[in-house]
Image (tube, rainbow, N blue to C red; front, side, top):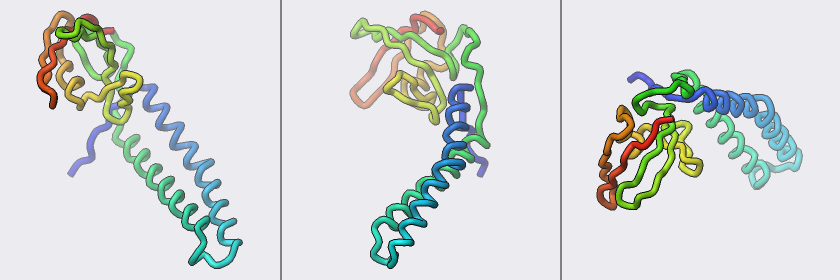
Length: 156
């Protein structure tokens, strides 16, 4: 089974590469030092410091594996190119037709999604629905609470 392609903007790629570098060069050393200190306390069978450090080591190593896999399968998109249709990398202004309010979202791959800063995944209901649409399009999205209608106001 082929591994899933990970869509990243250039900024997202750099962010993940930086995180990987920090994990490999700094965090690994810090955790190894914690483990070494915990072992020096003596009996490791009842040593909570040792257990905590080993759990942290497992997390760090797991995150390194995840990031390496993600970067190996990354497809970097050009998020600066002006387009007539919404694509991954587009920032889109949507008008909630019922509420009359505008919302601005940047459509990104799932690895970069962060709804707190209006970066939504191309796999989310809204992200999936707006892909391929152009300015002036009316989009209806079925969500658990019902149906939401948006108009594409602008593609930045």
